[in-house]
Length: 192
Image (cartoon, rainbow, N blue to C red; front, side, top):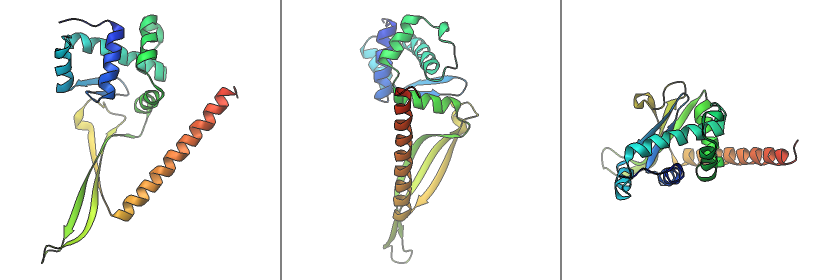
């Protein structure tokens, strides 16, 4: 088994993260990394030591958190490694995700799942209506996100109308967020 250099490991970690072959928990106090079977299989195919990959991946995660949030002094890390993480791993979207998940005092949504339901008449089994069962998997930001027992399941049943209102609200929220970010970016460019 071979060990990757820092740059190769950073590129592979980014590939695995983008392809959802690994799961990263951006915790308030620490980070967690779960390597899926598919990622383990790829590491074996590439003849890469999983232990070496994981060890280097944690350094990359710590640098990413430091770059995104400024919570850890960058002087703790090798300057070349910082440059590699900036070039190959960190993105504006990742910075947003890291900052929210490491600094929020609210619950964090980890995943969204749903099912389409049918309601049937109990006498003749005819479909009466359809609905959506929406499940939000959340974590209390004050707890350790790496601890699976702290994941909460919030379940909501929605009619088609409820779902349309929710989508409209979410679309409005997204538009407001993009407008705010755009306005702030323009002001930063003008040094206001």
